[in-house]
Structures are given as C-alpha cells and as structure tokens.
Amino acid sequence: MTCYYFYLWDADFGPAFIKACAWFQYPAKIWLNGHEWAKRQAERAGIGFTALSNGFAACEDPAALQAICDRLGPGTINGVRPAVAAPAATAARPEGP
Image (cartoon, rainbow, N blue to C red; front, side, top):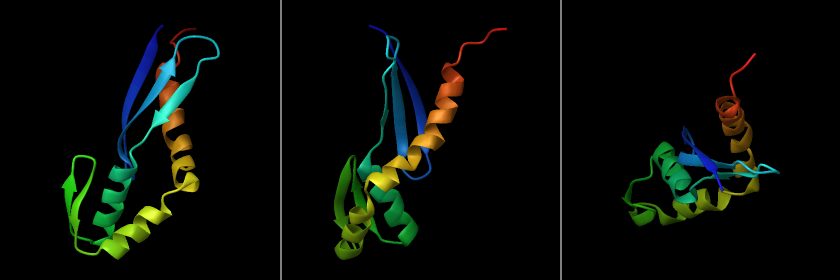
C-alpha cells in the first residue's frame, strides 16, 4: 500500500503533516500536535515556560497556560483544515493537459 506524506508548517500548530493514501477511497489525515499549539499560544501571550519535546517542564503562569489549553477544541482544529488541505491537494494533483 502506498501513502504520500506532505510535511508543512502551520503558524498556529507548528510542524504538521498530511498523510494521503493511494487506494480507493483515497483516505487522508491531517496530523497536528496540541502541545505545539499551546507553546505558540503561550509565546504570543508572553507566558514564560520551559519546553519539553512534547509538552511543558515548567511555566511562569500555570493558570494562564491551562486557560490556553482549554481553548483547544474542534473549532481550533477544524480551522486548520482549509488552510492546509488546499495546498496539499494542489501539490498532489498530477500535471497534465
């Protein structure tokens, strides 16, 4: 089975990728990391923290960080789909007449 991976960088979520499969019904998945999203939101809010590779080791304002994490939900994630799906679809489209 063949799968294609499209790696991308989202301004809010950081590194992400799309996995598209080459068999009917052509399933595709967008992979995002909520920890990376929370880190970017904390940086924007000016909250100091010590990052782990996939989380937080320490934070200056745990309550504010928890409030940021509580905002992550389906609406946030669904907002990413149009932004990443269109470029990936364009990249996957075969060239031809």
